Length: 256
Image (cartoon, rainbow, N blue to C red; front, side, top):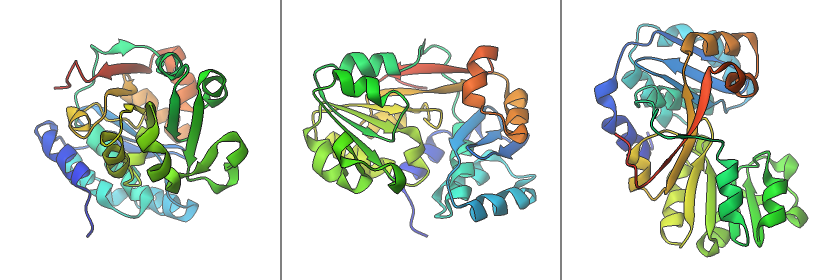
């Protein structure tokens, strides 16, 4: 199998927190694995792949998080989503990070700057209003619009080397593009932020070139699992009920 070195390094770095899985769920948008901690990852893959994973969840029962984390190497992206959630479930939550929505930081750093964003986040209109230049790299062909700066992800090699600020969706770990994107960032002058609930709070990502990790910490795993099963948008309701909080950790405060 073709394997990602970044994923290998993440699993190796946090294998000491391996534990038998207590629960796991796959929703339309998110996968969750509850082992020692609770990890989330964006659900990718075709509808057929997601349905197959849901129907065959029994194959994961009785396994520990390190075993399931190996599925992060799968090129079936629904399986990879589960594997990435399992990796995150082995990383100790960063309760000492700053509790803040990272869009505020991104808007401040992006003012007057050349910005590249991997993934179309909800605040791109606000960022475009303050940035000198903004390109959004997207896999979703249906929302591409070159006039608005929303261009294919394949343009990464052309725009990342010259940018000042690079924001990468944490879910890029699922489709194996994160390692390449961080490699491009290391060749540039860009301040690099990995953003979103799929972000893994590991200093392995700092070693690969990230400057800031902005992700989520699950405070109430069983409530989040239920929301996934009920089809509720956990990112919209979790903050209000304090089931999920968002944290920001910088390279200067290395993760343990």
